[in-house]
Image (cartoon, rainbow, N blue to C red; front, side, top):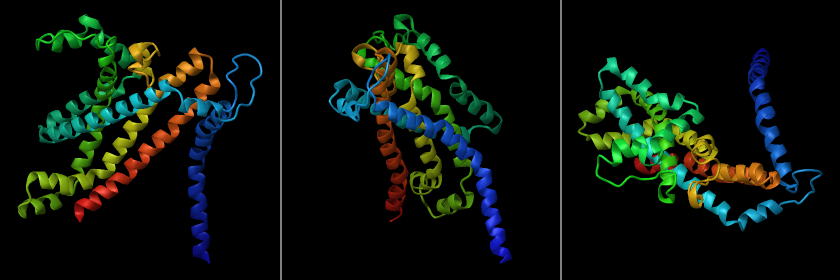
Amino acid sequence: MLRSSANLGSNWGRLALAAPFFLFLLLFWATPLGKGFLLSLESDTLWGESTFVGFKHYSDLLQNSRYWHSVVNTSLFAFSTVIFSLGLALLFAHGLRLCWKGVQGPLTFALMVPGLCPPTVLALLFLLVFHGKEGLLNRWLIEPLGFETVNWLSDPDFILPAIIIQAVWRWTGFMTFFLLCALNARPRDVLDAAEIDGVNAWQRFSKITLPLISPTITFCLIYLLVDCFAQFAGSYVLFGGSGGANDAGLLLVTYAYQKAFVGGGFGSGAAVSLSIVPWLAGMLLLVGLAPRFLWKGGNS
């Protein structure tokens, strides 16, 4: 009896500690989400009383070519950012582990500096990098290699790559830090035993290291995907919320901004914003399930 009372008191104590978090979650996430959903069911009337239109905005999106173009752009942006950021982060994390301990900390901090900058400041810096023929990227890389200069912010073929480069440069350092911590936390005896058994470096990496750091990789994937689908400030500073020439840099968040604040269609803009939820949720579900099947297959 005393034990059950103690367990009950402990459970209530845990709920009391978690209550502020769920209160703020309800206040700052669930409430705006519900308000946004109700707004998406109303007409696009900017002034005066709006009327209830049901799911008309959502059905219109399914027939809107610009919306599907923004879906494709956002998916390519997210996929490319994740692949390049995590690939470079794994490479840098292994490189940092081989560095002298005295420089490992300063190098890690230097890699993290772009991620510490506010998105708007970062985008302004990238204006200097991508700014026409006089941009730093053309002057320091493209011209010395003997290629023709690229107008990164006006050429539709290079607008989306420019946004991807900005995101990769911003987040690679942070992902490197997380993966470096995961690599340093690996049990040394397991790796030593595998090396004694004659397991080569690639097999140790693919069969032992990757499964051990898979929770950290999953966290990095989720972090990057959420940021990519919410990315607005960087592309807004670079293109003024227009999506660039031929909508080459039009993302879902940018399209929602255009609908709501440029076109005055707050109902349709809310519908675009809420339509991001199933796309992002589907990707996060795949991210959550993929490692389980990958490592299960690798161990069989």
